[in-house]
Length: 335
Image (cartoon, rainbow, N blue to C red):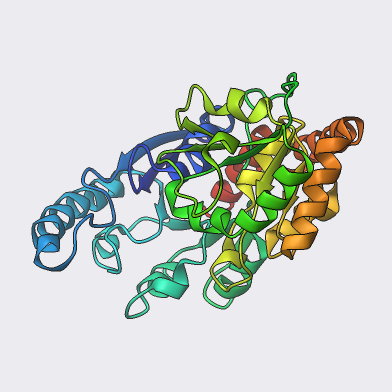
């Protein structure tokens, strides 16, 4: 098998999409003869300031990313994750080798002057995190659905804690979705007083009414996230039904299920597909959320059985080893 040099342009070394949609597949890529080198945005692909404060960032990032794009011509194939510079289709033009675009959000909804669509149109393949994303990009380039894989050797089942714990794990940007559950959670804590909500996040939550003694905040860390999820009785993934959320790839729910922790989730977008696969319950109203959570908190045997079913689904369809092999096949098909 001919060796293939792949250069991946990611949005930063600590960005989740770089960790879970590129870096975790190194073993499968190496086994397929694909040598991956990552070019992470030094200053981030998106500015941290507004107004005139963006100008120094823009100048530095354009220069750094343009040099990276030129160096990408040394590879056989390049992989882009969104635009190299926020809202612009610019440095990518300097890269002349065959290209692939990897998309795990509905990023076309926030593009300016069609930057994302222009980038997709120059690619030989668009790797789409779910069918909703693929539907948009199929008009621009060849597409394949490639879910975000879960490392089933790391996210593994363990003993849940004796106390009934509801788990939510995610970045601070998703906290507003969790806040929408506040009334449902109040009803749950009234029905199951010993229950608690564990929030694993890079920032503490700010609920309007939820009592402090019902909340456990666990600062996110790569070392501690698995144990925090594994000890839960049930995981939650709430979100509204919007064009943006339909692009979500259900990774949060998949990590719960990989740990054999059952989930309750909003049945929109890819979530509906995962729920149908087993291991999770759907909830679309506060009453439905409260009922599903109380049921699983009170009936621990049912919760464990549901969690085991979820683990089986993840192993069969979403394991990183499986997705990594599919990624390697897709990359080689571009040449």
